[in-house]
Image (cartoon, rainbow, N blue to C red):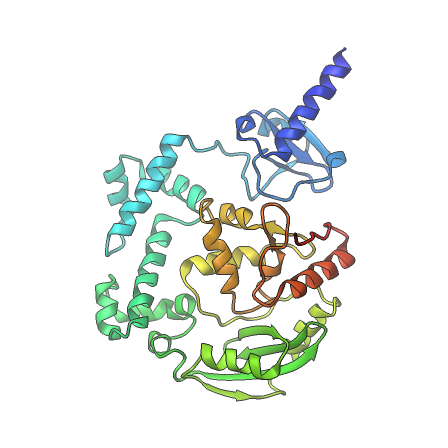
Length: 363
């Protein structure tokens, strides 16, 4: 009878893990023997093989058994109570309404939360600190004004930058180029590109002196060239088949299935949200997939599933930022900017090399 009860309990636990059942959060933790990592039942990571799973009733029990906490769901920490979650969301709305970056002390006083606790739970929930959140919003507002043709000096002070030096310190990281260059749709940029045949059709790789600014796939050389020219319509763009041949060869080796890793320098533009999504995509291991909902949870914005899909579609560097590894929640392929057949072929190749995941079928 005792053995039967144990089997029933473990089956219930396993169903909670499969369903990511929030009612078991803080009551149940599962460990994966092959990785020695333990998680919450609600963890967004890919579900493990049942034979590798064992269950615990506390983080302490799991760690005593030799398991390490998962970096994604952080099971060693208490989950945020609903009241705290509501306060953190209120902090976000407060920051969004300001035209400046509030201090941690100001936020702490406004919402009656200690500065250290606010900093910790805000980062736990949103993935960034209050300052980083406000700074990203300021950068987005600044970029919008530049795109509307506003003068740099006016946009700079209207969006809360105290000085031009402070802006230019972060320009390369946040804009991918200087504010003046960004405002002019690539004016002043020098871009070299090459187009070569590959097993996916044709591959275009475009570079600046800082890194790769575009990787595109297509069926026609002229079509790929037009896409690049439209994207950087005021840049100086020249074809050069000899520059950065090592970068090109690395990408070709990846496409051929000979090299699973693409650690190449990038020089790309995007909003703060897009960059968050792209960085999360680069963390997906070769041979594994995530859903759009997984990525939304990964960046601390669980309700932004549709926006995640849009950011994947806007990815300027195919393959290097592996948006082909993101699927719909039901496991089907979903969309892919460069064509579903290419996405299916890339995933099939990764399966063949690693054997980690089944190949989803488009319905």
